[in-house]
Each structure stands twice: as C-alpha cells, then as structure tokens.
Image (cartoon, rainbow, N blue to C red; front, side, top):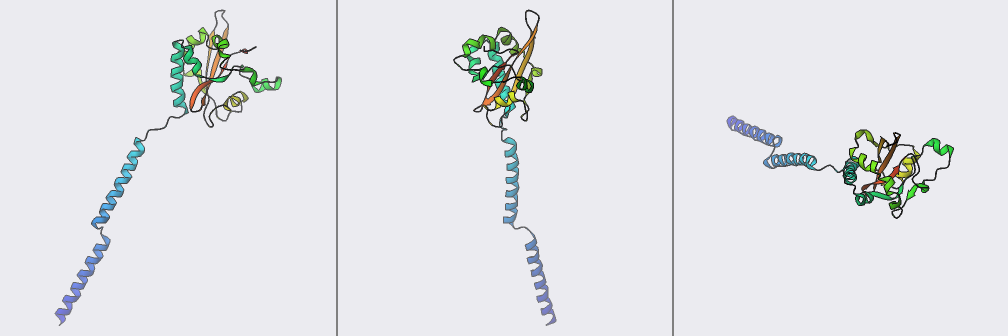
Length: 206
C-alpha cells in the first residue's frame, strides 16, 4: 500500500513538472510567431533604408541651377525666359536704411512677360551669359528663413509657403575698368524653382 501510494505521488510530481515546464517553454506556434515578429521588424528596418529621400529645397535648387547655367552657356534665351517667374522684380536690392530715407514701391520694379523682351538684353547681358556658367559656391547664398530684410520678405510672398530662397550674385570688372555686379534670387513657385528677381546697382525700369 505504501509503494502504491509512493508511485502515485511520484507520478503526480512528474506530471506537475511536465505541465510546469510546458507552460514556461514556447510552443511551436509561439516560436513561429516570435520569428515572424522578428522578420517583420527586420523588413521594416530594410524598408526604411530603401525608401528614397524626397528632394529637399536645396536639391531642387541645385538641379534648377545646373539647367540655368547650361542655358546661359548656350545663350538659350528662350529657356532662360521660361525659367523666370513673371512679374519679375528688377529693382536694386533695398535695405532698411533705404526704406527710412525714401519710399520704396516694389511694384515699380515689376516687369511682365510682355515687357520682358525690352529688358532681356540688360538682364542676360553678354557679361551675365559669360559669367553665370562660371559661377562658384562663393557666389551663392541661402537666404535665412528668419530674415527681417524687407526685400527678401517681399519676394517670399509669391513663393511656396515654407520654401527657401537662394541667391546668385557676381561681381566683375567692366571694359571701362569699373567694378559692378548683378544678381538673381530664386524661389519655389508651385513646386518648381524660378528666377523671381534680378538686381543690379541701378533701376532697370525708368
């Protein structure tokens, strides 16, 4: 009777141990689920790496600038006109001091697409067509989005919200030996960069 009772207790102990071990261990389904989850996580990481980065403002501007320089090099005035946004601002860049000293009316410098042929030779002069393709990093600048400069803030009103402005400015010596300069400001209009202003030391109109 003692032996039978011992065997029964021993069997119960083994049974409880098996149940206990079974609860702690992973079942085949659980193991499969764990592997599946791990693979999903790995695929997710791979997907993040493989997703192409969307073009940001600078990348879009750089692509535009390359075409702009090529058009200038080829003297392709039709292409250059298409790269401008009209009305195009042509006043000399005004400063805060200028605004204090005199009345600045930005509308006075705007030229329409129909007016453009009158001023095309001054905007894309022989010197500009020669120098634009030779422009370097030192000639370029990104306009601070937080600028308080009225000139740039006026230009920004026509551009896509939150987009950046870029500027190309070059100085050179004229045939008469005098130094002068010109520049272009570029802004994003409906998702594409365009020339939104041209400036030089003197007013283009009037």
